Image 1 (cartoon, one colour):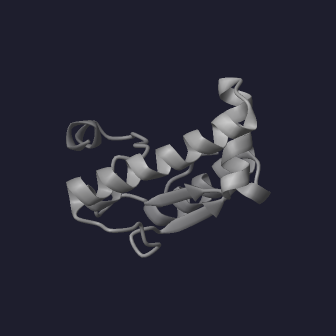
Image 2 (cartoon, rainbow, N blue to C red; image 1 turned 90 degrees about the vertical axis):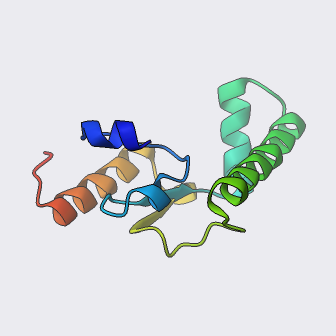
Length: 111
């Protein structure tokens, strides 16, 4: 994570990067279990029961990783500058919100 961050202009997805890079824009992207399950059904071409079980397993894996690596029992909103709830947003809409936050935070022009 630190090696990629040193290169600059990177997007790091997960891996607790928000705990390692205090100067970065920290964005939490989340959705309801139902929304995430239906995304997995579509992406992995699996039925709802398998997707729901996979969603729960992914949550357990993420929890174990954060607990083991960073000593965090749960992910709280405090380490994030921005949280997006994807149940009501499109990917394009979320990207525009993140671009606006980057422009504001780092005085950039990404348009």
